[in-house]
Image (cartoon, rainbow, N blue to C red; front, side, top):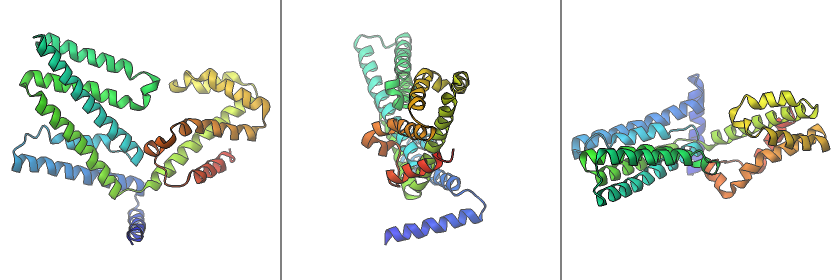
Length: 296
């Protein structure tokens, strides 16, 4: 019964946005963001008027909603989790810094600044490592939040209070956005977007196959050097496609390239459902990408 209701509501919602001349996916995202922001602002005013809590802390619920909001559930969930992890890590680190500095009676401005800058430097170094690339935003949040908590504690001597309120506000903002997104959001948009991105990547790979197959190495290098992220993988990519094209026909090489492109996704295992929520079956997505790939 509930499933039938949501199906009818989705069709009605699609017709409304189409009649208004708006793109449904964009309009839904804007409406979700409006609803979540309105609830967050309402919480701020409730805290101010009825509870008497300073607006500085509840406003972080609104800020978190704005930062975490992404068009797809996978993007939002990943960013929300990383923001929460970074804030919690910053709280733990700031507590350690406070304990060590107070234990050795070093709680003065120079020591505080050195501690904050040291944590920032370490986080900046670690986040550049390929092994933690997935959680880069967590390290960014750790160094930012740690500096805020430690410095605010030095000025007001309220580290426990601000750390707890900041964590609760940010976690609350993430939960608020994800709840609104789950109630008024459709996973089909994420599925279509993933298929589109993957098929585009395969088409680009097919172009590289054609370039390498006719020994136009210089032109292939030119394509790769236009993207800084691909520059480091230049030799590996060219070597891979040279192996493919030396033993297979163009069409077979494109199929092999498809499998090669999907290897990073398969390595995620069960985690891929967390990072890339796909409602349609894996087989359907493969067939769709194959169909688009063969049109190149």
